[in-house]
Length: 126
Image (cartoon, rainbow, N blue to C red; front, side, top):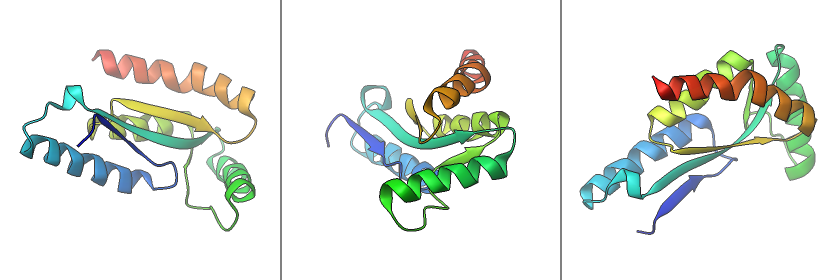
């Protein structure tokens, strides 16, 4: 069975949550502890107070990188919405979420570091 699994950045958050739950079920059936099996998700992310602008920029960056229409790939969200979505992944069993900005990398990292990650850390302590 291995010792970990990462949901691809190319699958939706909803698909990832369903897969995480399914894998947790397989672990239980196999008598494996979830804490000893790293469940993770790569999440292409764009954070902006203007969600439509974040989606436009994320789609352009991912379409350039992968080709085709990537308008449904990744998460384009306000900081609060990003916290909700990542929190949902964690509730589904993800112990690690790789936040992968696809454009304006330094600006996106700053937004994640100041507006998203602190809220996730606070959630984790509750």
